[in-house]
Length: 241
Image (cartoon, rainbow, N blue to C red; front, side, top):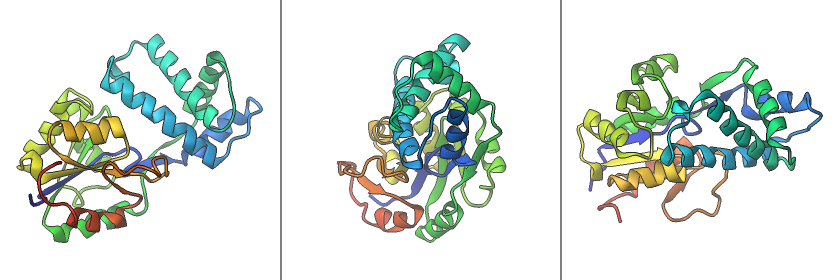
């Protein structure tokens, strides 16, 4: 079936931390005498982000947690980040380091290849959309990150009342694009949230692996940068297997 729409996850697919997450984490950890590396932080975030994806898919979204439960979750999250760098710390210390991370001034910024990559997909004649668990509106995502004119719409967990991998957020994107599931592709960095979530509603997925956390992944198409996508999209034909 012809691809008529391409959807993108946001965090770690289109955008990352600014300053980079290894810089933010290193500054916080240094206050506790810990030295981190970029490679270790990338490895740790791979595990920590999977923890978040499982939480959003199962017991309830992180954003809906009561404050004490959310603090406990992020202590575990930080524990995994530090473990990627070879540091085993208790939950209390991990929570203190996470609070130092949160105290810093940082935000999200598009990766340098995103706008050129999105524009390179336009000749394919497809609708382009964003599907994200950010707790804001789609309009704000587009305006705040300079995506006006580069994507056609964005759907957020606030808009849909549900997070990936649950069906309502994907179904809202299909409605906005005016396509059926078999005509859409979803590009994202998480197996549970993006790949399995898309497959569950009949959307064909592509794994975006910018940080090489899934180097051996072969179950679905895998790309590492936006420039890889046009060829990956052209290879897609037929129904979801």
